[in-house]
Length: 286
Image (cartoon, rainbow, N blue to C red; front, side, top):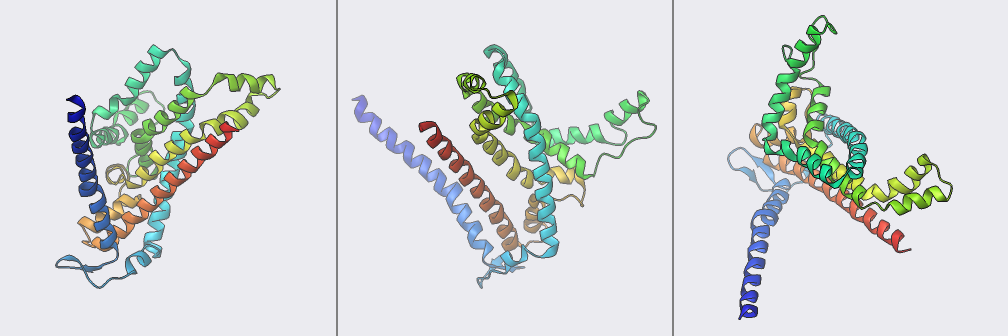
């Protein structure tokens, strides 16, 4: 009886999942791909003929400068998150299990608040008459307020604040699975701490590093509201270009082409992450 009921239930779940993926993932992405090869139309937004001009526009010096600057800020964000998250994840994996749960809970608590609200909170902190400037002036550290808002540094601080947990969690996962016997064996064979770190710890934690980079780098290029609130018009990300093309310029084909560029970059990172995991698996089998 139960076995007879399981089969229809399983079929229904599979149909629901695949239907959801087809309707809300595959079809919208195919529409974006198709739109990226069409022509801008003031009345209907997109129209024939098919053209590659949208992809050629991506290498226009004006947009290329924005893309490179966006990549620079996203890369800086990723490096800072890695420098902070790597030792934090290592320390987190070394504490008692009860404290680990508490620290992980504190790490994910900010997700309970909308990221837009948290970005506005940062704006209040870094404003000319904000808490940071007022506190430093009260302590006598500075004589006049510092300019922190609407700068490149403010955007990077905002991105690091929002994306740091996405670097820490995958790193914590690989550190938690790291076998201490391998570290002891490295020391027994005469390797020092630095040599053990470079030749043992880093290769074994490489999948976590790549996963963290993947979860930080691409989202950092797409969080358009962070530059809008903290950075001003001179510190745009690729996400700002895409948003402006769809909502302001009404150039849907070019916006779709820029979105496809980000998607291809994510696919490249996914391939790199999977390749590193495969090589790590082959090495452990040996």
